[in-house]
Each structure stands twice: as structure tokens, then as C-alpha cells.
Amino acid sequence: MIAKTHTCSLLGIDAVPVEVEVDISSGLPYFATVGLPDSIVRESKDRVKTALQNSGYPFPAERITVNLAPANLKKEGSGFDLPIAIGILAALGVVNPRKAEGMILAGELALDGRIKPVAGGLPMAIQARDCGQPNLIVPAANAREAAVIDSVSVWPVSHLSQVVEFLNGRLELTAYKTDHSDIWDIPCPDEADFEDVKGQEHAKRGMEVAAAGGHNLLMIGPPGSGKTMLAQRLSGILPPLSFEEAIETSKIFSVAGLLQDSPLVVHRQFRSPHHTISDAGLVGGGHIPKPGEVSLAHNGVLFLDEFPEFRRNVLDLLRQPLEDGRVTIARASIALTYPARFMLVAAMNPCPCGYAGDPIKPCICSPTLIQKYRGRISGPILDRIDLHVEVPAVDYEKLRSEIQAEKSSAVRERVSRARNIQLRRFAGDGVFANAQMKPKQLKTFCRPDSAGQAVLDQAVRQLGLSARAYHRILKVARTIADLEDSRNIATHHLLEAVQYRSLDRRLF
Picture 1 (tube, rainbow, N blue to C red):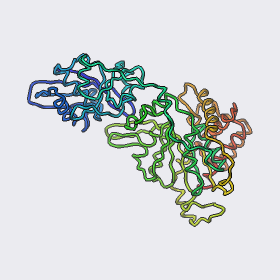
Picture 2: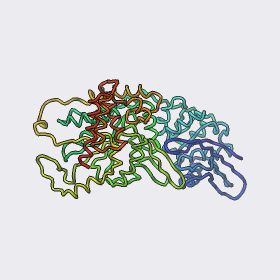
Picture 3: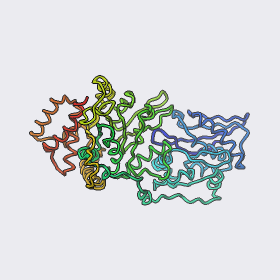
Picture 4: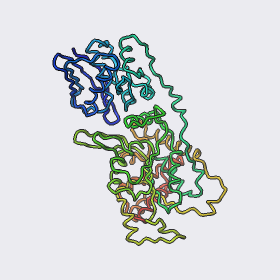
């Protein structure tokens, strides 16, 4: 007899529907799983057999064939255990076949029949909604994230026997409901505030501009000048996540198995990997590619401290995500694309000892050593960073001053107003910030007047800027104008934008 159940397989951050066909026929005992299963899926036969027997259900001593369709899609993960087990019981007549076929099931089976959580509960719920089969049976630990999608009935289970009794109509289960207001009320982790930073008004202004337009930022300064301290406060001035952004970010964390206390990621992420990170750790990788730090920082901040200490080949992998907002990882068997639209914030010293150009402490590095140190960062990467900000050492008088600095909340209000202007400007274009503008939008919204164009022409010639740098100056100037609620880009907006590009030509 043939029985069918339905489940989902993860492909990047999305779930794709998979039909599980189970056939039990006469012959020598044999269990075959076909349809491009990986090693974890192939091993499910042992978990399923033991879980069925230990839960008091029969396991046929016949030939069992399990087909996972579509057959050309690579299947991975332990979430196929439950649909295979229910498929076997449906083929034996222990479970109502019609009821089993009308559900999407996912879950890993323990040997005693308990159902363990799996990755990707949220993408599965989205797929269940989109394919018109809005009944989803998932492990109890996955129910909260899956129930974020209101139009899907999510049935949480913790044991195989619960699923059997529920499908046979002998057990009433209550569909899990997630209170969206409780999700958005989850307190943000303790955020450091800009009021803690003494001095560095120029650097704070640069961070405000970067946050307002979603621009990438490089800070250069001696040790102890406050670069890391400033970067750690950037998340506190970014506007809150929209529901669509929260869903997209949460899907990444769900497939990575990192959703823990909350069913949704409701706060912008701040990721700060160590400079010894590998290329697979930064952009993602593995036999079946998993998201890396650039994707986990989606809609948030990726902070790279000690920028030149990262291996050059690792930094060069940032070119595609910085330009396209996504990263594609290709393997022999599969190619996956993960979203990676983040703000890159990097910090570095001007030289190996850190004191090149310092008015007080002498630099002990030779010119050759300094050039070698700065040469670890390629020109194409620098071109993709919109703002280069110098962070000098803080004067002792400012350090001991009792004058209260501006709070992050006040800066966030200005940033949010500028972002709202951009959302209205680009409504329907798939662009959410000035940094994401395409050439067509640049021509429309970033037209300087004749005086501003003359300033820009002179800057490009004197600094030897590339075409990409020229466009990024226009984008930054547009953001500065938005912070002032100015309809047009004025000359002083362009002058400020240009000075954020002059530092790299002086140092590099």
C-alpha cells in the first residue's frame, strides 16, 4: 500500500514543499530512501524504526520504499523523521491516510518517540501558507516561531503518540497562537549610549550620517581613541526593524538554528567576528552552505575591528554582498543565495604601532612597514566604503569634562526622520535607504546645482576618485540633505560628503 505525507526541505532561507511517498510491499525486510537524501536523512530509517517500536506501534518486516519528491532536490536535515514515520503508519492503516495527507509535518524523532526541534520552523510556516495547506505539525519547541504566521494553524507536539492520536481524531490539540504585541515588547539587550562617549563630535556626526542612509563606515585612529566604543553604540541610533525586515532576518536565524528566546528577531543585529574568522565563517559555506556572519548581520551592523588584521582574501569576499546586498555560495551539488544587506563598520589603526600622525606619541614604524600594513586593504574594498572618518585621541580636558553628551535617543529621532523620507521617496522600488540607490534613482534624486557640480568635479580630479566613489559621494550628500529635511542637495552637503572620502587618499 502507498501512503503520502507532506513536509518541507530548506533551500537557503526558504522552505520548499516535499512529498513523502511510502510504499510497503512483500519481500525481504529492506528499508530504502530515495530522492537525493543526505546522510542524516538516510539514517532516519534507524531512528524511525526504533521510535515506532518503543512507542508501541508496529514496524513491518517487509520491503519499505520511501520516495522524497521532487527527486532532483537535495534533502538534508532530521526533520524528515516524523513524516516518514507517519507515512509508514498510514500505509499500515494505523493512521488515517486522508488526515495524514492533509498536514505538513516536520520533526526529529528520539529513540523513545519524543519529537525534537528542527531548524527552519518559520520558513516552513511561510511555505505552508503559500502552498495553500495551512496545517502544520511541528515540535513544541518550534511552535512559537512558526505561529508568527497568523494564517497557518500550528499544532505543537512532543511525542509520536500525540501525532497518531490527533490524526485519528482521538486527541484534541490546541493550535498555538503567538501574541505579536508580546514579541515587539521584548526588551532590547542593554545598549550602550552615545552619551558615554566624550568628545569625538566629528566621528559621531559621521556615524549619524551613516545610520541615516545605511552607509558603510571606516574609522581610523590610534588605540584607545574610542573606535570600538563608538561602533558598539551604532545599533542604538538605527531605526527599528519593520515587520518585513524582522521576518527576513528571522528566517536566516531560523535556518541557522539560532532563534532562541524570541520567535522573531525584533532588534537590529550587531555582529562582531574576530579577525581570525575564515572565509566560510564570514560569508557562509559548508557542504550544504549555511549562512555566515554577513547574512546574520542582515538589516543590522557588521563590525570588523582591527580591519587590516583580517586576511585579505577574506575581506575581498565582501565585495559581492557590499555591492548587491546578497551572497551566493556555489558548490558542486547546489548554489544558494542568502540575503546580506548590512552596514559595514570597520575600525583600524593608522599603522602597526597605532601612532602614525599622533602629535604626542611618536610612531616607531618604518614607511615600508606602514605601507605594507595599509596595503592589506584592497582599493576595491575601500571604494565600497562610503565614509572614512578619522577618530583622533581624546583630549584629557574633554575626557574629564562633566558636560553631558547627546543621548542616542535624540540621534535616533533624526535618523528615523531621514529614513522615513527615504522610504517615501523609494516606495515600491525595493530600495529602503540611500545607500541602496541604483543609477536610475541617482539621476533622479541626486542632482546637484551648478555650484555643487563644480565642487564635485574639482574633488574628483584632485582626489583621483573612481566612478563608484563619485556615486557614493552623491548618495552621502543626499543623506545629509535628508537629515536637514532639504529637498535639494546644496553645496555644503556635497562638501561634507567629499571630506568623508578624502581621508583614504591621504593615508592609502
